[in-house]
Length: 293
DNA sequence: AGGCGATCCTGAGGGC
DNA sequence: TGCCCTCAGGATCGCC
Image (cartoon, rainbow, N blue to C red):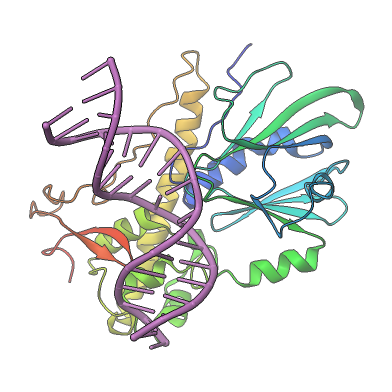
């Protein structure tokens, strides 16, 4: 079997896309050793370090043990306790290449990890690439598990499992627009512009309404909508990756069945009213003036 | 406190 | 066919 091996992540990665990337990377990374790190750019790594230190920070020589996700953050843990955070930003992509395979595009590749199976250290097992044309993404070095924990503590609970009670407690005292609160990763980790609009539409709440004015019952339906919209997107992302792996090499479309995102001026799929587009928290926002109150 | 603008960056898409 | 313009987006920072 000679399946295409490159697993590019999509544009605009939010939680579901990051989860798909995590899932697709897992079998190629876990248990492998980083034989060599090739640095394209130094300025995508946080905290900044001299180029001579970066290979070590990027886990050169270490055995990869775990790949976690919190919100939109990927956390790659080595057996040593050191870890790196991968944030895809807007256009970040992680790719795995089989030995001898060339990347589809060689521009904007900022980091490469050459991997081996520790049982057969002489031969390459695969290579992980981080590519990010717009460089809104970031690679972050953690010296120890405590540093990871400190970083994770700044993020809210993962949106995939958010409860109405939890969302209510974390959001309802804010006077900001509810959409701005949903986008705040310290409140809730993983929701971006697309799924914020989708979840607000599904729960009939206007994006600009102050979070204080959202009722307890509405927080319940909002949390349920967030879970539902993200869960179905995780499933869709998975199926898209499977499509990509079929004989055609067809990448499939990541343009999910969005009901409001990107549809300003078009009819609401629920009530046919014209969807309104505006800015909330400096983000393009689409909502239905009829369905959402 | 929180809204707002500016900042980082490139590529896609529209207009001519 | 090509050029120029605008715009998109996540996160952070500084100002009001």
